[in-house]
Length: 154
Image 1 (tube, helix red, strand yellow):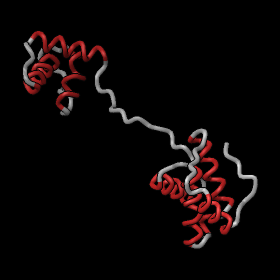
Image 2 (cartoon, rainbow, N blue to C red):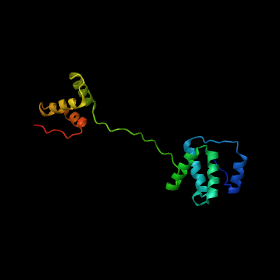
Image 3 (cartoon, rainbow, N blue to C red):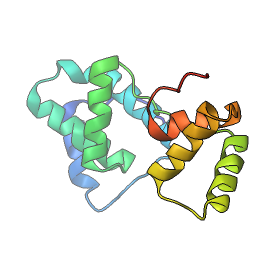
Image 4 (cartoon, rainbow, N blue to C red):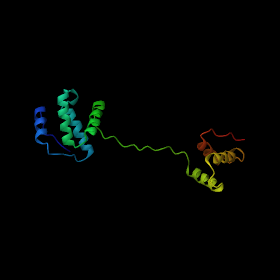
């Protein structure tokens, strides 16, 4: 993790930024960089600084962290909202599962038997299987495909 042995004044920060213009730095990991950014924002009391000093601190953070200006803006906004800079865990969007494996096999069997009819025709067949013939294994399929309520059993 990147350590700051001492805090620099704003004048020293400006001198550092001017002197290190050709240099670039990066952190070891995103987590370590986020911790360092949070510590730096807290150490310099970023939220209570005047606008000019905030710009200087932002340039310093950009230089040391290696993040893009947009990413640093998001991290500072997160710090402003929560008081912390944390890695947000990734959450994959997944659609809910409507059909069981048995339902899929049953639908494939119906499609194969009726030579792949259109969706409305297949739904009508599934509804008839439930209402006329009492095959309740088709009930979930007929309901989920059409979105209409399940027909009542006779």
